[in-house]
Image (cartoon, rainbow, N blue to C red; front, side, top):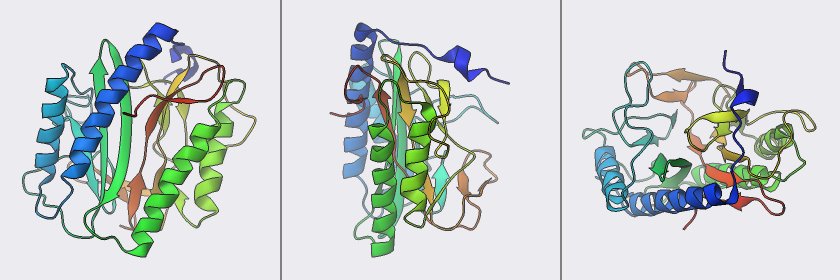
Amino acid sequence: MIDWARQIHVKNPAEIEIMQEAGRINATVHATVRELLKPGVTTADLNAAAEEVLRKHNAVSPFKNYPGPYPYPASITVCINEELVHGIPSKKRKLKEGDIVSVDCGTVFGGFVADSAFSAGVGKLSSASQKLLDVTEGALMAGIDKMRAGNRTGDVSAAIQKYVESRGFYVTREYTGHGVGRQMHEGPQVPNYGTSGRGLVLRPGVTIALEPMVLVGTEKTKVLADQWTVISADKSLTAHFEHSIAVTEGEPLILTVL
């Protein structure tokens, strides 16, 4: 079993600056992909566009060949509607009007990783779908607000859970936020549910990828036959937002923005 507490790596200011640059590249990938979310575009098209941005910035994705049931075959994950995380891009999968598309991407630059995700609609969304996106993004911001020196990881988790569940949605129990830095997955684990006042104390230099993964009908999930794609167990809609954050002496620093 992984001892997450032992795997927490506090970054110095110079290292955080490198992570910010990786984060800017990652945000550029997202901005590029977001522009392509139109009916008829394939999820493989999104992956190709992401890889082109990474090449232009002399960066690579930590997702490509990530170990699992078999090496992950793409540079981003693309999930549609009931798919929560780890969806594999495909030339056969075309976007349709009204789809919710969730894109997760990581960037390795200068020896450090930035990791972020967003969900967006293809064309016009239903009011119910838009509410799901708004709540999921709001939960991320609620968690980020608790990413302050002296707080505990449980304060962050509890804020996300309260924001989501008070609005009638569910958070997954099976997939979590995580430390990020020289590796894509470092300590600590930060679930999207928890109890305030518990967990590890946050201190300046700790960097965490917070990622609320929200479901409409259930907290339960299952994995598809491709052994990577995770969906809601009841096939209800899902959404996923993520930023990499640095704890500072003051306000939380969002690393994955332009």
